[in-house]
Length: 326
Ligand code: SF4
Image (cartoon, rainbow, N blue to C red; front, side, top):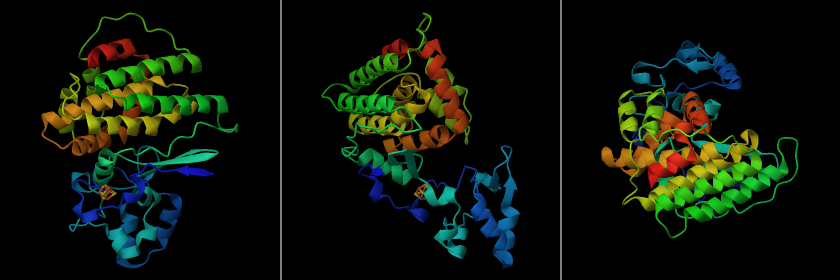
């Protein structure tokens, strides 16, 4: 089994009490059954506290009941984790132990990444050049999980898209070329029906983001406001790294969905929103990316709704997106 790591991966260390946000606020932490079994055996006051905090959510998952301000009940005033302090790192649940590390397994190879929703990961992702230079593989063996020809097509197209994204042109032109290339790959994979002609609407992207769920509803206005225009001025280097991050995080998922266009459109939508979010709110680009990712990418429901709209809504066709960014 071969493993591929982006250049920033090994540099990641949780900055714990120095974290400007924290993964301990805003999310339900799902507790795996092995960890819950262990927590049942913990004696004393801390064991009682653990067991009192675990509830079943509406999806049937076992989670910690969040305290005020949607905080994890074990996130102490010192901004450190009480479970870590009392029981040690080995007894964190899998969700906490792994975050923000991502692992994408493809039978004969595994790719690793970090979640942009972690502030420290976002800082590394947007400040590291040539992060994917070791991801040059284009061969795939046949296996039960996916079609090797489809995987090869995706790996080759990813490499080509990475070259397009790093060419010496404006970012708007590079993103458009990636989308045109994705249209051609899509036609080879699974020709989608041509969208019916629909009048162009500048607010189509904003309308999509306005339908989503938010942890902090103040972020709805910020993200919707940031979806009305495309302006990449002064930020092209970091925005290119962001586009590459999305390319390497999402392109190979298409081996299951056979949908290359939606992840490519999502990459473009993310670059548009994060760029404006940063400028409108005087945030560093990595802060804007982290806020966006925490609200959007970490929500399964939001991602499902976005990918569905990008696949089927004629207002978000490739032609309309190209017009939006040029
Ligand atoms: S968000 Fe990242 S840096 Fe912050 S506490 Fe969590 S893992 Fe650590």
